[in-house]
Image (cartoon, rainbow, N blue to C red; front, side, top):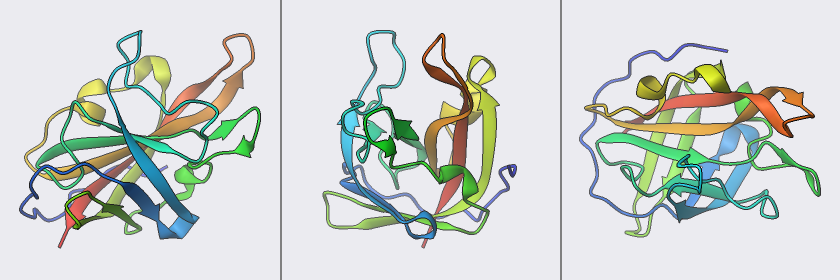
Length: 164
């Protein structure tokens, strides 16, 4: 995994709902739906029966807006195997992410770093906290699978910054 490194500051875009996320390096071109918090007050993820769909955390900035926009998706599913972000952890600094938006514009990001964190030690301020740049976090599960808890032990977090 790589640590986030600073990227040049670019003026943010106005708020607009994302419609898709495209990550050419890993073959992702997936729909994005707006979600808020789940019943446990955690960032909601797409339903397990939609492993090819991603979710934008609609209570935060939209991709391209100043601040930290968050998009989440599954790494796999019991029913369908590999899911949308199965290869997310293979991204490297310099890889690109594109987020088409309802306003017809595309927010383009460059990956600054990719880090795996234990879920119980996820640095919330670093991952979700406000920034003065238009940034994107793309998050999925990773690490070992805990059969008793029926959950992965870690999160893979991609840190990316808006580019012109």
